[in-house]
Amino acid sequence: TGEARKLAIDMRLLDSSYSLADNHKLLQVVDNVERIYREGMENKATQMIFSDIGTPKKKDNGFDVYSEIKALLVDRGIPSKEIAFVHDANSDEKKNSLSRKVNAGEVRILLASTEKGGTGLNVQSKMKAVHHLDVPWRPSDIQQRNGRIIRQGNENKEVDIYHYITKGSFDNYLWATQENKLRYIKQIMTSKEPIRAAEDIDEQTMTASDFKALATGNPYLKYKMELENDLTLLENQRRAFQRSKDHYRHTISYCEENMPILKKRLSKYEGDIQQSEMSKDQAFSMTVGKQAFDQRSEAGESLHRLIRHNQADSKEFRTLASYRGFDIKMLSLPINQPLPETFSVKIVGENQYSVSLDLYSPLGTIQRLQHTIDHIKEDQVKTQNLLDELKDKWTTAKVEIKKNFPKEEDYQTKKAEYDVLAPLIETETDLDIIDQALRQFHEKGKEKQEQLSFELD
Image (cartoon, rainbow, N blue to C red; front, top):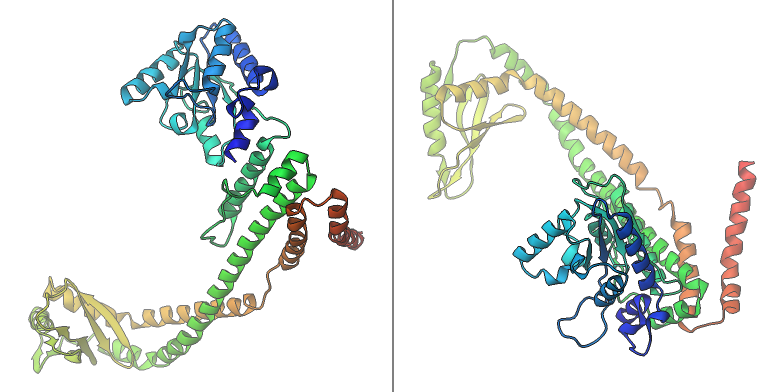
């Protein structure tokens, strides 16, 4: 593909026997650059020319695009000192100096590659035009290049961006690739389902038969690429749809596992609620271990001591205290390990209610236990809401899990057509035979369109 990209710019990059007369792209670039240069004399308008192909060579060992463009511009009367290559600014100091000169209009034409000039170069002050001599592989490269001109701080209210295309060359394929990638990106960004990966197109995508089809002007090459792109998008959508079904299967399993637990919990609230309300206004009384307390601070301190010493070789669910008709229980901690900053205890009646304690304040501990018992009714409401939510999710998932991929027919049709077309291009089959082979698919599409039109009428 490197050779094809070079041919799309200037054939002298591969064969020195060719001349400038054989290459129209460079002349078009130079014509435009000179015109904009003359029109912008008053405010010293600047321009950038981007090309990742034909960059300046360290040694004088052949033709390069940058030097040729500069020579042509100098021949037309543009001072050599006003034309610069980013590649010559090979240090931060030199790059900063070059940026200042471009922003001041001392250098008015700057040639750069995406790598060296696409990012980190602030030369926008007087930038009037950007010229794309080649087509990069990635859409982000074009955005980065244009970011040198479409930028805050540009004195020009209107700017020009030029893309130069050699008709019938590899440029056609590269622009189709750009279109495909942008469609991938748009599909990923707008998809309601997460897409974790997208197949990219790189320089290995084109086969020898694709080059042949491009060179001979085979119209089915573009159609093959369109099918490839459509299939890639559809495959992404199919995978996303399948992932959503996997998610619904998990939801069904989770709901069916937890709904009975919540129903059982709901059946046990009434006794705990009655105990909570009956004990709410009684005088304080708590038994910690085997000792009874009627003072909150003393009970809290004793409970803290028990919690800190609640260690065992194996995990045991121990009763530490009783309060307002409920047991205060806690799972024992491992021996010879640092104590945690917070401790989880359970208030146990018919149901269990978790409380997190930090043991900073004995009174604070009693207040948390009291608050939890006082609000058992609210806990019942939360449990009922959670059960209702799971029921809704389960109902939705049961409906969605039965659905089929809505574009399955389109996917299968395009895949079948591609499986017919690709080998024909590979074997350089005559266009008439390809047309005949694809006719069955086009006729089916036409019949479907006519049927849809009839139904709409």
